Length: 332
Image 1 (tube, rainbow, N blue to C red):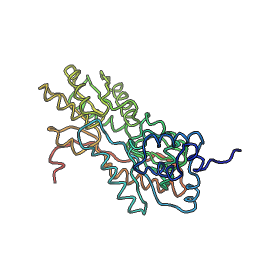
Image 2: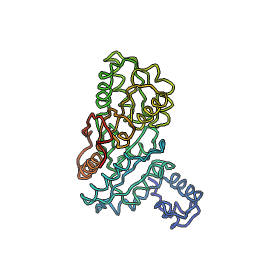
Image 3: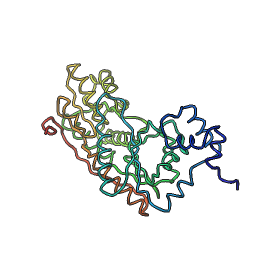
Image 4: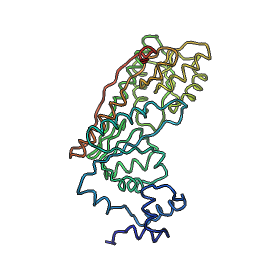
């Protein structure tokens, strides 16, 4: 078996100082992208992971966990969901004696799985919470599958020995809100604005909607709004006139659809999914599925602690509520 590569080997191959390799791995500022690319290329070629650091940490728990989140950049609105995720995880980590570091997916999107593992290991991370993982995040999925870290996926819908998933029953919740809206309005021709083809949560919601359409003998048109107000608005302009109701896979898209209907000066019932506060300011009442995102990440931290203390991964289903949000429900 060939000897394990060292950080000195990486520095020699990349043509930089050992201290520069360390700076790259710790993501220090002031290092050029060209230098970073050379260092990471050397790591890949040498199959280098900073195991010396991991070994040093293995004898004593660091009590350090990472929260990886994906900010929604498809809207000009405040990303309320991500902020609630951050708030819940931060509070619960502090209560349980963990140090929490936050990593936005944009910070690691250029890395391969080995680089992501190194990035987390040099920061002493023992466990990882991931919110917003999609099928497009192939390198991050490889990190999860590697089982190097204990992982809790929010809305991931998979589990293994080292990985748990936590979230609402997406399929059932989508059926509940759509069924209420359709029955109340005697609707048969439905425009369903789905989230994103690569989103695990969106996939489950769409599956629930398609099952409901078969059950209720609905004429269902599915279009993808990519969780964007703008795209939902455009789809509503294109298709709403010939539909009886619009079911949206998120509240932001429901707001976009409702605003388009107002501009078109026609009424169609609209329902959303998530229960964000912004929904109540949209101008009319809408059915939606309310989730407490802060509580979800609080439970996720507890689940990660469970994994870190030797238990196996599992799927945890959290509570949801069918509500009709309005302005007076959210003002303080």
